[in-house]
Image 1 (cartoon, rainbow, N blue to C red):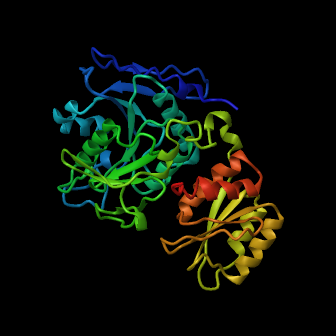
Image 2: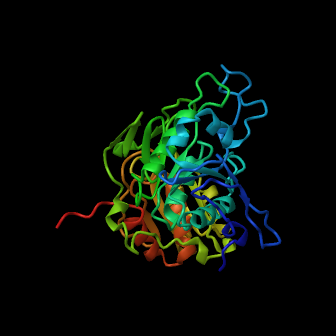
Image 3: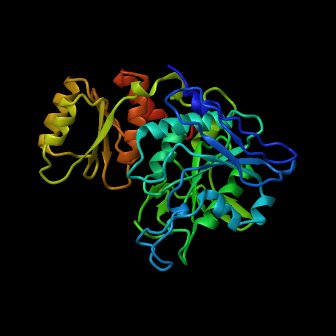
Length: 389
């Protein structure tokens, strides 16, 4: 059990007189140091200090041409700093900013869980510093909802963490990255989402990481909070805050943080979890193969209220006997799968299959007791407001 020293040695300096560039010193032989660079030279003591964790993504990419946002090409832009320069001088009136190179790569195809693990340690290290008020993370949108939910479940600080990105590349006519970045910084700097956990801001709306999902491959309004909607909107200088996340109930207490403190475990001890999709006469072969391979947990994305084929159901029963923990979800995109207490099979409520997998992987990392996992799904996974007494 140890922290990654290369991530924890981030000497982020945000001075009253000005922001200074600095570089982390790595003490691990097998880790590259993470560089920290200042976005702007001057800082105001009257403004909040916001760190931007640059994870790349479409927001720092270019298309083959300004009208062709369906194809990527060109050399990209020089990191998120170039986008920040485009929204100067206005953004400098919102917050003091500094940029940190993120542990996540920005590309969904090349993202691995180790990078999410490192990202959490990086965020925890940055947010633990007294002179940091909030963090904005830019990254690719394809799996942003999963990365944001991972952050929501693992980051230990109650300070605001806001994810953002863009659906269009930086050289296109319809580039949405400047507005998204500006509003994400504005939201983070406002302190409005303190104790909310991780949120995502896209297209002038911000969402709870637990609820937000991508609904369209191309449209700029792709993200939705589903049946719960957005937490609020940002319209120019105006914030419209519509509702809180359930986590605010424990704000300022030790109960706020989840038990998934990654500083207490080694990455090699992380559990494995996979997703199996169901459909008409779905084969049991993938499910059995995963059980035989020793996977710790499996999420089933079932039809309707979580149903799976007869062959899959039989294989699942045998998998439970082998010690694999299962979580039942629906492929429909909405609606809750309630828990009925079946040993080894847990109801995933209204978590999407991909988010249930994130919670299952983390839960099985911190316990091998399926009943404890069930309890965490019913509490941490549910995020219900307690009834007023």
